[in-house]
Image (cartoon, rainbow, N blue to C red):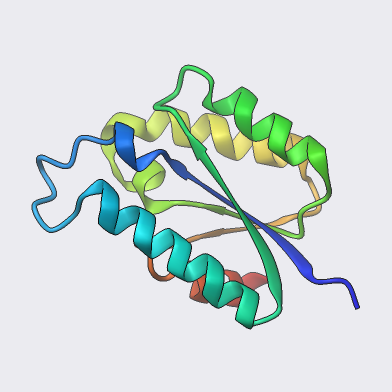
Length: 123
């Protein structure tokens, strides 16, 4: 049986300014993403992380990743979606996913540690 292929798109935590988020830092974000990637594996999904820059190459990086193989589900992370400075990047990435993976379900997490729940809602 083939596992459901999941792509998790997020900002590289090392590039994010956490000064307005006192309870978060790059290490916590990365740990949350990696823990949820492992959780997805135990649930029978094959998840890959696609961490991007703040917008210069992000659409191209995501398009290239989506061209590597078919993904059943694509998660666009809360860091891209909820921080107002990245609104245009979010819009670009939604359109990249729509073009490159039209059959994939798109879902959204609310924090690095609830990605598995977002995937389970749609995959």
